[in-house]
Image (cartoon, rainbow, N blue to C red; front, side, top):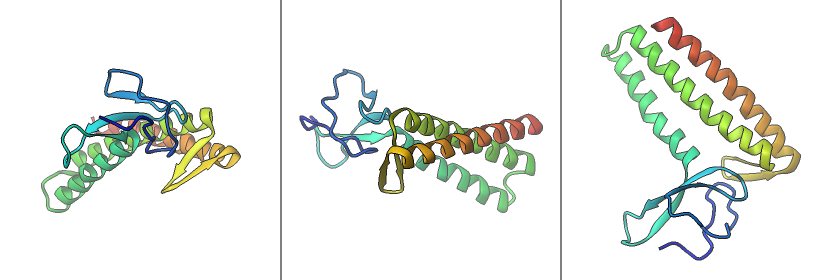
Length: 146
């Protein structure tokens, strides 16, 4: 179903094998969460997706929808603040996960560029710090709304 040596979509390295019957696992090299997704175009073909990238992309329409709904008067300010605080909390958890994995493995990706070594470690520390601050800010926001 997948190639003999699947490639991690995050670090772009070839993994030895999927090695588990579950559709979710961490990359052996960069320690990022991955999952198998069935191909929409070909039957019996699976793609490997980065769970971090998928989570970030799925959060965008949620925040965009809340913003448009607030602008059109569908949400009151408390509901909009709760939506933004929840999004900050989710993005913070994603960044902390990504940052701690980068600190552990010395792999980081910014846009399409994969970094290694001290540059990756510095970026991962920054992601972890910003992720923790987003978690704190989102938590405070949710506590103040309710």
